[in-house]
Image 1 (cartoon, protein in one colour):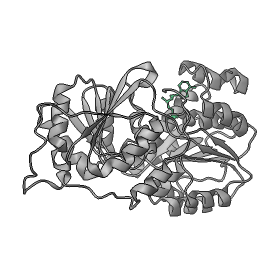
Image 2: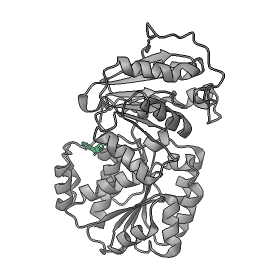
Image 3: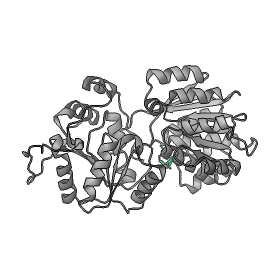
Length: 412
Ligand code: AMP
């Protein structure tokens, strides 16, 4: 099966070829024909499955013959990074269509966005808060809207955006096609689906297993020794670029500062940074200037950075879904990747769930000349104190949430 079978407009096919897409991914195979028939769709898939093109391609096709200069498609995204990337994908895939995509999000000047909007755009990719500002000021109108995409709906719900989504929906009067993408289906998202989608087709791409090119290792350690162990690990390991995940923004910021003192070019990515700071961090890491990026899950979500040699979980993620999502950034396109996790006794439930999912025990490694017996200093920084889980979920519930049957689709 190739992209030719979808009968997309020839100008869109030019963009597909230029991006080097040859074979559609499973979500594209299932979603594109359905969306081209005009049906509403629920896509149960994560970032990394090719879901962006799965909605962007049919959306471009549909807008080919609609009035220019009026917003025909709206994609609502949870984060600025995802909004940027989706707008970029629409621009690249639609390069020969004459359709224009604009990203809209907070933290940057309204005037600049107004100027971009006045230049004309048929596709808007927006975060909910700033989109509402524009709708209320009348700088964006949705009277010609034909397609609405709600992307990463579960993440939007986690971030408290559901009331904003309802307010946005109130601004859309005309009938439209609605596509909703979500990695999971919590009850509030099911409710949203019932309210907003009409007779939708559901396309589910099973939970992806990590690529076989990724090797996993656990480094058991006490909470207060994590930073010292990480420094030692980085000193002893041959790495090209390292993405480190922490559970909170403060821990990301603090850890990045501590790693900088080792002389390694390090930056951080978290929700307390301005848009400009985030872009500098992402770009610097992407182009190899920074060797280490310390990030939180939400900030790193949707970021498409390839060629990461190591992903290190300074804090274990809340669920196996998140583990797979994090380490999906290494071992891409048949390169070898490595995933290290610094684990404490609090992580035992997750480790069991992960080993069950991978269907194999994960090797535990201790460093020979590292002093694991050191006691915490009385003035230890909060980043080195044991962390309480933030979700309020017990280990058993986390486990239940992560015991879905996986399906391997290979590395992106
Ligand atoms: P996404 O899940 O939409 O974030 O896509 C993940 C990555 O896969 C992006 O870098 C896309 O450019 C790439 N991609 C999407 N579809 C294809 C395809 N059919 N063939 C090759 N790469 C693709």
